[in-house]
Length: 59
Image (cartoon, rainbow, N blue to C red; front, side, top):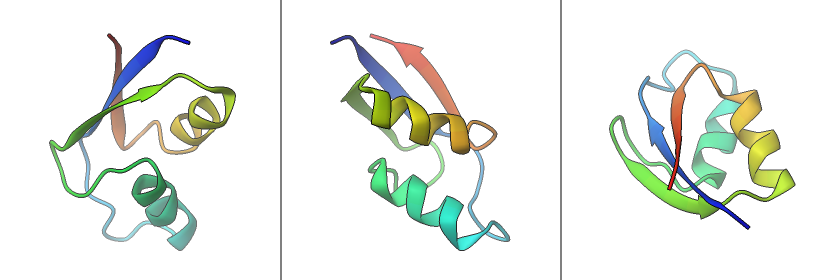
């Protein structure tokens, strides 16, 4: 599997609880925090749900 780098670019304040938990499940903690994860179908699905809060790049 390919790796992707996910960076949180917007705050989760005033977002739904579901979006907050998705960001947390991705391993993001604060704005400008980045994580590298395997690009599995479940991770891709989570990223699509919060794509307005994160930036994605392939590694």
